Length: 447
Picture 1 (spheres, one colour):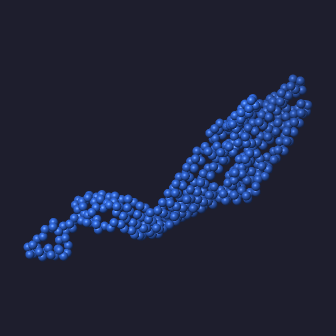
Picture 2 (cartoon, helix red, strand yellow):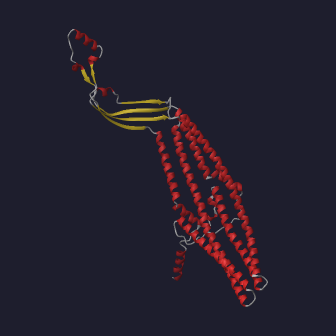
């Protein structure tokens, strides 16, 4: 029973430990910028879906009421040949009453309702251009979200492995501090026995104080880094399970370069901008084409006046609209659209060059980290042996305290630098994978 409680306690204590893969999932689910980008994608998709209605007919219901000052009427005596007959009868002294020959064609209150239909058959390719612009806006929004994910991924690499690196560095400096303390204790003991001068003890004391200060500084840096990681992850994380890693070799530069040119989200976003600019050119050029449309009209209600009796109940037809003189400045708008396309194309070339230079530099920096790390392994081995010999020599009166201090300082520098170089490698390597859109290959997601 006690064993079960112990296992439960261990499980509980480890519940807040977090791997890098788990941290990445947490960040993706909680980050507000990613949520905003997702909403932007959905909004662009809604706008794209709205463009499908451009291919449908527009059907409108109209209801109109009008009150006129008097009904429209027709006096037959005003029409030929009655006008001539009336004139002849008047000459003979016969006068006709106008009221007997006047007919109201309309009522004073006029109420009508209709269904009108207009269906665009040809729009000068403007409709298709609008649909394409909406489609490429969705693709651009998707690329922008992926770019935001890449940015967050690198920030998490910096924070997560920064904490791991500082933890390892803190352990390293604690080990150096313990060695300095041991040397200080040995020096005090040897002073009591009259084997060394007081200055040797003071020198060892200064080394121990410096080591203690360095350890405390790293401790405070580690605390700040942990707090920053917890803020980003919006949780209190007790321990990190993923460790610093180092690769002996990485792929050839060409593989990263080709993947970057094919899959770079930055280039995809710019390509979407170019496609939008090309569609915008077609949209502006469409104003030079005529518009062809079908139309129809159906009366739902009209009064029983004589005038309305002459109006057909329904009608259909085809129409053409062409602006002979356009006041919107379509020529200038077409020129501006073409310049926007050239601007986007130039921007793509600039982005491509920047990405190639960045990829090349980061690749070389990553190789440099690997070489430096491997060289430091030999340096650390030498520094450890040197410190051991100096410490033994001091005990035997053959070395001074400064000799031990120098040896321990060299060992501390070499071990600390190894931690920093491994951290630099992880950052450069992750950025190399980000540029080539290959973050799934990051070892931290599997370790």
